[in-house]
Image (tube, rainbow, N blue to C red; front, side, top):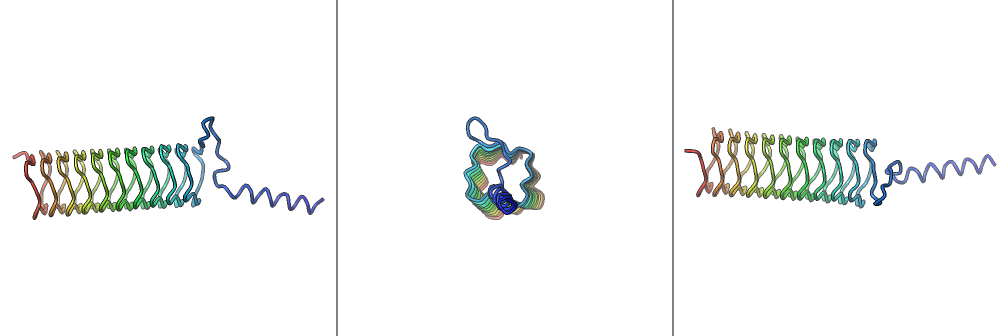
Length: 236
């Protein structure tokens, strides 16, 4: 009897430990409510987590590579140092989330909500952020090289020292954004709104600024060698 009890206890412990989301609640529509859960360093790679609620959850250093998080609620979540490489976060809610030093390289964030999110030092190389909302987000020192930010909202975002080399920022809203010291070499800023933006010391070499609005922007010490300023509004 004692031996059976030990085996049963071990079996339960193993079965409970197989799924890190076992403590979550299942909604009527089948989606999971994992809000406020502590999920440090969990491995959720390749999981289908569409519409999951992970708001305010602690997912620091978690592995979510190639995970499907379309429409997921990650508002206020702690994803510091998490690996989200190649994850699908289309239209996900990440408002106020901490993604500092997170890996989002190659991820899909089309139409995602990242207002006031912390992305300082994050790797977003080649990430698709088409139409995403990054208003007032902190992207200090982030790597956005080759990223697609077409029509993205970056109003008042902090992009100081960020790498935006060859990024697509066509029609993006960068009004009042801080781009001091940022590397925008070869980027596409055609028809972008940079009114009132801080571009002190930024590298805009070979940048396409055709039709862009730079009215009131601070262009002190900016490198504009080879840039296309055709039809740009410099407020002169």
